[in-house]
Length: 112
Length: 118
Image (cartoon, rainbow over all chains, first blue to last red; front, side, top):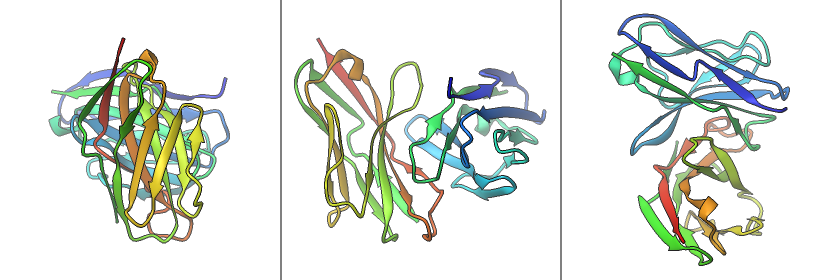
């Protein structure tokens, strides 16, 4: 089944404790992206990747890191999480950037 | 830079009726893509419809169609014969085409919550 998977789906952590949210797609897509969703703000792009080893900042990259060492994986790293990073996070992929993006199920993160 | 604005935080419609969701955008790109995504209570994001700005013809997908007014930078979504399963939050989004500065950058509006009543 073609899909985008994210892990974990739910995470409660404390300020400053490094965490990684994994994202994987099995559709051989070139493009992958991370978004955060907050009430009243819609979805905002954090980072995106056009291909392996090619990443770029979206609108809200502060406090986040990404890497794209393999085509299928695009992990989101929070080196020192803070409460303002409490949010719902989505990973997405598409064959090319302008095509339909397929979204993962979301990861709900709470930073205390 | 791109901005997308959805001015209707909430809308409601009776089952089987038609509803239109508004979206306006601003972009400096000459070519770009526009999207409507649906997010039902399950939180899963699903594409509803996609429009390439250089195409004059409005995109349609079954009961869903858009009214794309390029000069006015307007991209509204019309849902015909509304069904209970259409209850969701709807997001409008834009991205620049290849060669532009916002290629790869997807910008979303704030969303419109649509409730379909039986």
